[in-house]
Image (cartoon, rainbow, N blue to C red; front, side, top):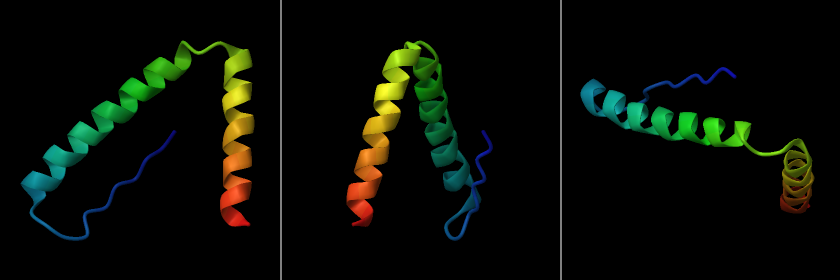
Length: 57
C-alpha cells in the first residue's frame, strides 16, 4: 500500500505530529487485518461493496 499525504495548510510541526498519529493508527489496523481469517475478509469485502453501491445510488 502506498499512502501519499500532502500538507495544504497549517504549520509543519503540527502537520507532522498529526500525521504520525494517523499513520500509527492505520498501521495498527493493518496489523489487526492480518489476523482476520480469509473467510471473514471475504465477508467484509462483500459488505463494503454493498455499502459503496448503496452510497452511489
